[in-house]
Picture 1 (cartoon, one colour):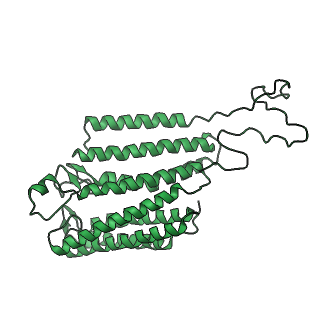
Picture 2 (cartoon, rainbow, N blue to C red; picture 1 turned 90 degrees about the vertical axis):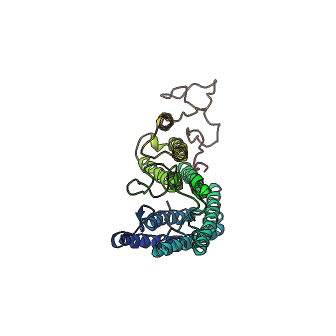
Picture 3 (cartoon, helix red, strand yellow; picture 1 turned 30 degrees about the vertical axis):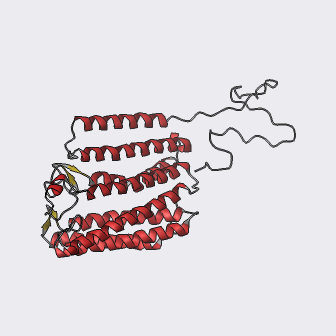
Length: 350
């Protein structure tokens, strides 16, 4: 996989977010303030880490593009500028000791939140543009191409799930004086008991889970393709590109199912760590379907033997079922049998 031609603004942005994450980690230790039930610097830390990974991934994906590089460059630059502004607003509100998201308690807070809302919409559109470009891109390896394209598509859906958090809760509609419109949690107020590290609600549903899992399909599926490609260097079924492609198709479908499952669980107001019967049944069904489909995908693809010329006997030592017709006089010798969907000397279509 090429690392040349990286998107420079996104690369610099990823480094800047890594530095921001370090600063936020120091803030966790040095600043004991708590906001909405969690350390006040935890939110910028999580955002910085996520954006660092996302920016680095998009910078690499840009290097793979042959068509539409100029459009991709502008889309990536928009993502860089917009995300930088959003991160600056989040840190500004942390320094002020107040919420950045859903906060409409004062005209200033409402103005900042409105700006963030516009930025998020623009970032989603820019990411969608890059996803469309990736779907139109000729990539030499079909399995890797599928992983990148499906990862980008699921990531766009995951980003869109974040818009669910902006809707007012029934409690907020009943009490319009709270100044807070929107929430992460479903069925319980934000700020209650949380799961370690993630900060997701431990008592109710949390819409950030589907948002997080879906958004990072852009890293998980291409990494899986890379691991499978490394295994393909030796003997075995994964050495066949068609097998790797089928495994990744199944993995992408399973990942999309996981995003749907955790989002459905959250919308029903159910904590991630306390699934009920329907959720467990859905998870078991998803796991069984994924495992069965993966085992079927690992089966070696069948090859198609050329038609036998009834007027000629098979060559010595070669079974008649796989012996091809003898070439006509003066013609080039046959290049041999090829797997279904490939042609000699030519990589599979992406």
